[in-house]
Length: 299
Image (tube, rainbow, N blue to C red; front, side, top):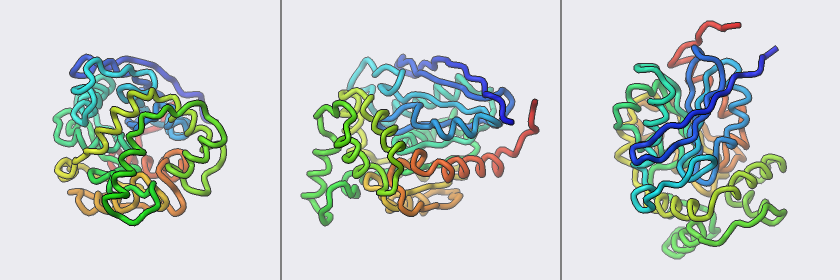
């Protein structure tokens, strides 16, 4: 029988002074896994992975700036950028891993972009043994988005930009808001409880934070950073993802210097760690087994 895993909380301080809420689940000495969540989400997004992996791994999770229990940055313009995301990840790695200790890093959506943005950083290269990119892209997020059911072109791009960067409040979670969330971010077959959980997480994101990051993502260009991601990197994409369609996953797999393969999950939308937790957790376990090696079990 699996024993309850240990949990501790700590604060990592980023380069601009932003205090990052971090949690470490599992026993010391286990293989280390670091999970970075996406836009409008929080540590809670990784609940399925934590429940599984923390039994025999040391799992490090953190709230991106402005999300969950991490406060928004003090300086609006400089505090919202891919460089800031990379700074935060560096702070988390430095606060939780021993010098030279290697880990498998997984990022979903904006979390994957965080890993790309950090690819050149010395701290990232010191600690990253392998990477998993879930439902993410490196550029052209707005032009490639399929949220608006129109042919590609300037009109679709303009409408998509207006929707994704909308300042309208999300309001309470209602049957209508769950249907909208399912359409925009999840596959048609997503279970109702998983839709509801994603809705609770997304609706908890403060509106100013959601809008600020939408502007950053709308101008995203990390193509050069992808080519600097020089550790084995696996990619997962959902076939029904409207926010980062499979075209992004295919482009990433083709551009990566050390691709560990692309997996396209049929019928799955953007929220892959929640919609297909077994596939995502299995991919992380595979990377750990291949690039960190299984450590001896402890009582």
